[in-house]
Image (cartoon, rainbow, N blue to C red; front, side, top):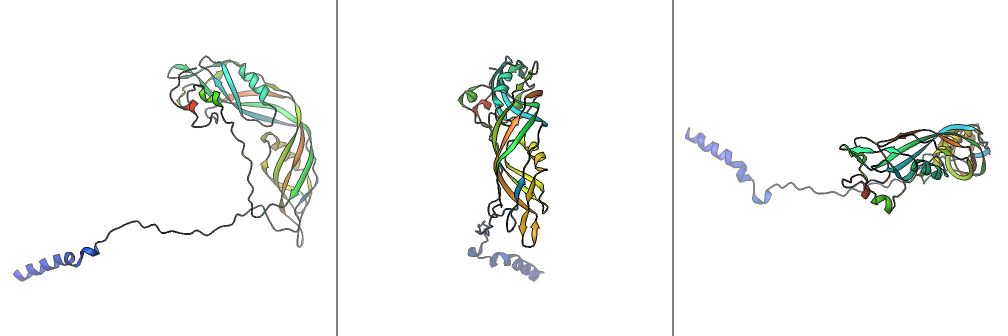
Length: 291
């Protein structure tokens, strides 16, 4: 029995005696630099061809009727008056003046927060009914997409608020119990006009010389349905491959002359989310009362 006890003590102390002070294990994270392989940029619209597609006939639709939406942000005071209007998106140029004037003349039921009327920046959408009367392709150049440069669509920039707008006290929309609403929706009329518009887009052309798909890179949003409907009738000289015509994309850059008729508003919608003033602007900070 005595011998068994001594043996047990020796076995229990063996791991402790085997661990030297300089052999103490310490777990430390050691960053290992990993060099990633360089991946060259690739344009998925580029294919090797002897010559890219080129336009032959580019007619544009006449009397194209559609609904066109304008987005705006209106500063509505705690008394319900509209003091400022900023258009954040328009279907094409030349609509600002008429929209601003009519909204500025509109009386609103003020927004409410905590049972009291407050001032807010109210996001508004206005739907207009009208048509593109006619148009003409003034110039158009077709080139093969650059294999090493993927296309970058143009992004419509949100207007930058000026000092006056940032100083206006406004309650953030997420703290408003009830949005402002127009007491009587205004009837807004925008006179027709003509202008010259730059466009840039990608068109996929079949071996038969017809446009199959379109990717807009730079073009006003309100003109895109009209151009899509028009391009269905365009004809192209197809891309040339080693064994004959092949399907390929073409980068089209040019200008179109556009004439639009009068637009009349068909409705006004207030929204809970807006992009003006931008997030982080001083007008959205703090708990401002009504103006």
